[in-house]
Image 1 (cartoon, rainbow, N blue to C red):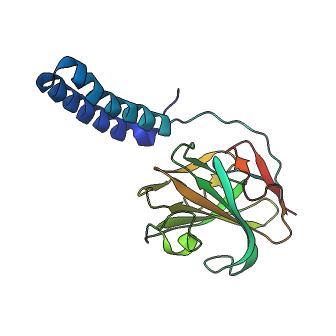
Image 2 (cartoon, helix red, strand yellow):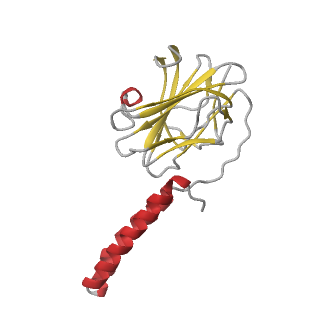
Image 3 (cartoon, rainbow, N blue to C red):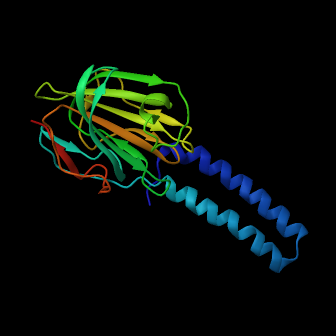
Amino acid sequence: MKLHKEGRFILAGFFLVFLIISVVIYAYVPAYYSYILILPFWILYCFIVWFFRNPDRFGESSPYDVIAPVDGKVVVVEEVEEKEFIKGKCIQLSIFMSPLNVHVNRYPVSGKVVYTKYHPGKYLVAFHPKSSELNERTTVVVETENKQNVLFRQIAGAVARRIVLYAQKDDDAKAGVEYGFIKFGSRLDIFLPLGTEILVKIGDKTKGGIQKIAELK
């Protein structure tokens, strides 16, 4: 299993801590009971390893395709007013990631990165309606080949306290290629031009990097 680079220090740190705890428990607790006490720590460690998995995803897409940027569940599909960059009406499509989902964030469209910004903020639960505006988040805008702007946001949640953004202004974006990572449960919002054909509905599960979720005009 391929692991994400963002997990290296975390996994090494937890391994050392759990190893020390296990040695201390084994030294001071009778053998049978020590195994019972030690086991939950290593089950937790296996979960942390699983969280940082980074599966290879390769999918084909056209310049009009919008690809799922993350694994998760569609929680919002609605027309909204986007005030930061688009400054007008658009379609918001939001995907919630549980701690069990792959947390690699991928470009939903191909084109040129024309805007990036980090916003400090709160840590409301990621499915809260105001989390897109109030939580710690990043904003990235890609101008597609047919000159449409697609905005997307990484949003920290109540558990996720670390957003990693690799995208920089003037980067070339390719749909399905990694542009960031969020640690331990969160949400990703995509803001699409009006008239975009949405191919998913609320409650649908998405597969990041390979699933087509919308089609631009």
